[in-house]
Length: 248
Image (cartoon, rainbow, N blue to C red; front, side, top):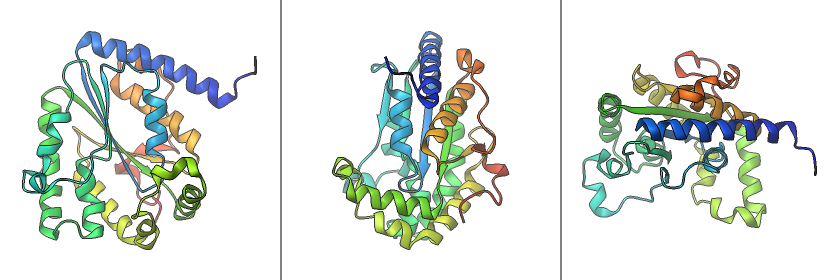
């Protein structure tokens, strides 16, 4: 039997602890929401895959909503996300979330400036409601350098197994890099609050990022997860301490 790599061995230990921790959250009836945001190709899909690989399929859901319908665009903005929130014992992972309105939508012109501003004012209140209802809300911004993003986007095009990752918006990710940086900075500044803080993850090294994301989630959820090793502060750090550390 081939010896596991250092990464695989570390990942397996963390996945075992994830299973133990989820068993505890189910037993305790705890509700968990994990929001994954970040630039295109920052590693959201890969991290979510490793986190959920051995979790309970009945108590775990991954939510990646498509473009809103005409009816949904006329609703209260947060309305389409509410039905996907967890019941007791459930864990929900949003692969992009209501924060579309803080990044992709304003940068690409899919919403009006006043809608963007209204969202930034409303998001903390919406999240306080979730927190007050007992939901553990973990918000992750996966950061990546411009050069590494360019490399990964080019790799997508060349790899036939990554066909479903290719998007018409991929080219815009590089062309509008500075606009996305400004939107990110404003989002972190205006929606980082005590009951639902933002955590930044440096993801240029995917494997190191995944391990540290899992460690952060485990320690944030608590129970058996509290025994997880602390994440590397050079890889995972609070948005409030991110000045000068984010990809410009």
